[in-house]
Length: 395
Ligand code: MG
Image (cartoon, rainbow, N blue to C red; front, side, top):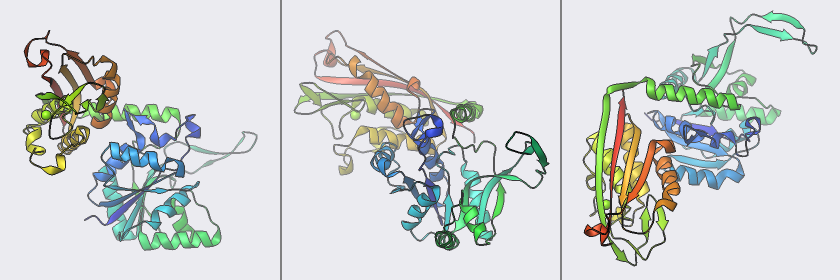
């Protein structure tokens, strides 16, 4: 039942991180933090609409980013304000008919679908629920001179996390009251408290950290790495290989690894004929035991005419993700007499790593000629082969 809209305020400036770009766009394991966060929400069955509120100047770049990660169909992007409250208000304006709203910090990418579902489940019953964790450190009240005034009893203290899930009508009411009173809260629960509405706590996780400082990013990288490698079942390792070849003809662009390469000829095909990406797709599908690219994206289907093969690759990776597969490594060889491809490897790697959601060091690209022998040697076509290793995690 998709009865909940997610609003993800991503209005931070990244000042505390000492970065030029806001921290939500900073890479975690090779992927922007915001993309990690959105992906988790797409895995929660209760989530329908996903609204992302970003600073006005990042509207277009966010739309482009979602496009790159094939998330554009799931998300609505709006211009947020300077305060979190302004961003959430902007999100509420484009809310469809969802009875519940889950507000989640863009910079808490390690949230799990299970915790999102638990919080939503509680809010369905109580009207408003949020994640929080009991305070574990001893707390001191300190004066301006650094002297301790007293030790605070922490037994009833909890640290707020997100998501905070609220019935849409209650959240609208809380916003109207806050606007009327000029009240600014640091989270949605405080707006509800302001008008005396109860909010229930659901125990969150220490893993659900908020990335606000550079050291938080290190912790998040470690947690992410542990999550990926900690669940590996060695029996879940799957290898796949792919091979593809396309004919070189005049009047077509030459696209390899998503890069448009200047050449007198290009590859002929129903899609953009990106032979490198096709070989990689086939290798991934092979490892998953899911047939080949032709089965998933048939030549006869007009929607794939002239298709950007990176989009096909991202769909293949969606299948991999749905099957709990992640890529350990991929090795690709392009077989071409000409042109020289080495100058384009970096851009190709960027495209493939981004589309596959992996770090660049996971993928290797190389090229060879066939010493003028055979069809590739005569320049009649270009071929590519790929090998990938995937692992199926037992989650
Ligand atoms: Mg092909």
